Length: 194
Image (cartoon, rainbow, N blue to C red):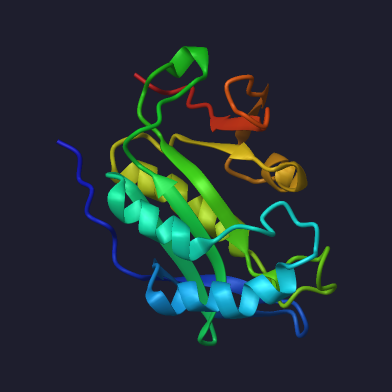
């Protein structure tokens, strides 16, 4: 039986770019405060930015996640402000790579960093490491669930470079013809799977 208990908050480190200092942040379950930050702080900056997630509604994603079994939402908070958000599906998706076909994985349904942490919007960004910490947490969550660290995701066009350079070793499986927007699919390849 799967352990779907959501882990408690954990301390992570981010790089505060302005002074090149490592600072502590909290990775935790999404709260109303995180959703409010996304609405009141993120959305006005993203509006008209042309970013792939410009129209994402995290409040709506949260409502849907409460209706769908296996959906989990997480946030990174630093200095009292939401720096990143991620939605995971820990039940419904399966591996697509032939060697691990249909094995369970943690699927990253949505991942976004605050606009001020994106060099394309704010250069230099406020913090570095938000997206990488969220992906690392998805891998850790996969291990907690007994999925051997397997994760998968469809990358928005503007995030392809980010996913290609991650140290977790995501395999670029190319555009997914089953995906309505033909997004590129990434998945971890675990050679040591039994």
